[in-house]
Picture 1: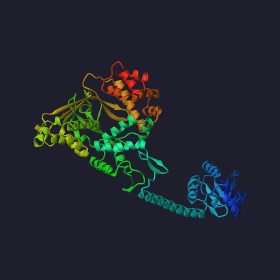
Picture 2: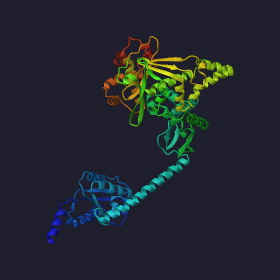
Picture 3: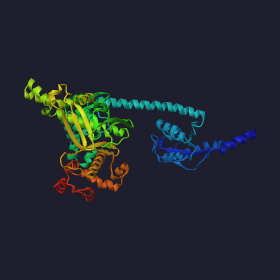
Picture 4: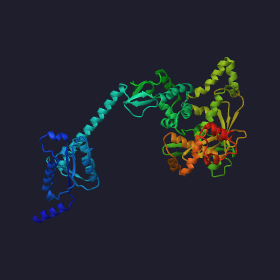
Length: 559
């Protein structure tokens, strides 16, 4: 029997039982009669550890103590040093005089014992309360504390939710992203006039345009022309999805949204409630923004052809993460043969948008509808006929995407794609009237070039039919700079170095190329449409930095 005891003792002593003592004394402890001094706590803990020497417990002489620190939180130098050594694997057991010396917060206690200590296999012992997490009794007590801690967390969560509910139903803004046009002062929304007038313009202009896409374009143009670079960075880029979000935010009519209901807010409205409600009616009629490549191929399927090969363009699909993309490719190329024209695939959504824009142009030009104008004028006055035709384009915004596609199918006969642009052949039998009423087929040519951009959607750069000539080098440089500019304004990128890293380019190259983003709109237009003098080349722009003033730029490059 004695031999067995000696063996057990040898095993206990050889195991890792490095013990440290943590002591804490707050100011309020001075008014209590119990033993609270740091020295007294340490003496009691040392005696307890010595009583466990048979189990191999050994004291590490390093001091971990906090004087004048409350136990309500764990923001204590001595305790943080203790946690650091625990994470470093220097400690096997932490001993305290009483549980409340570690912390008075149940939540902190559970997080420490069941979190940091458990993760690093460290036991916790109270010298005067028989609490040891390495024993079955200690583990039972810990589990009970965990149950109470979970109950406390759920109660806290319910209290927070109840507070938010009461606050919002009383019109109190409870935080989050600050809406454009407001600023936060003492946790309340206050009108920020610098951006408030932009939001008022947004609602007023939307009532005229009735199109989120068109509104987004105007908003971006207005911000670029009227606001500083810092303000542009704050506002970010506007797009269709963001227009829906901004226009449908009840904050702007002076209300707070909560669980699908609107409550009168304690902040000032930027627009009156009637105008806001009218905007919602237009948004509801316009429908949600269609997903990328949302069956766009079915609108123009069998109507798109390669002009040089006189072959059908086949619809193909590809997936990137959760998004679907559709594109057209020449049947010859699809079958592994040589295509005489386009040597790249053409984005289906891009073709769809170009054709749609031309259809809307026709709907917006009553005189181009020929026989339909005459029929309407015969049934009513010329003025009434003109107004009816004018409303055809506005009615487009009220239609669903499926109805747009149906009109395109009936209105468009053929779309010819080539390396020099596209040609659209319209058929006059697609607006619910006899073909002869609209006269002969109409053909529209759109000269331009399709460009593929790295990590970005394909773009179409138009050019005039006359003597204009695009410089491909300048054109690509301008497109690159515009893409980078948008990424910087949206906050996606913030420096030349980040641009260079994303596109695997030299930072010096990015710096030189970025000057195209600061050219005047007239110069950009001249580059796009081939109107810039052939005397100017790439070195004239990125080799010698152009003047910052737009008037000086135009005097140099356009005159």
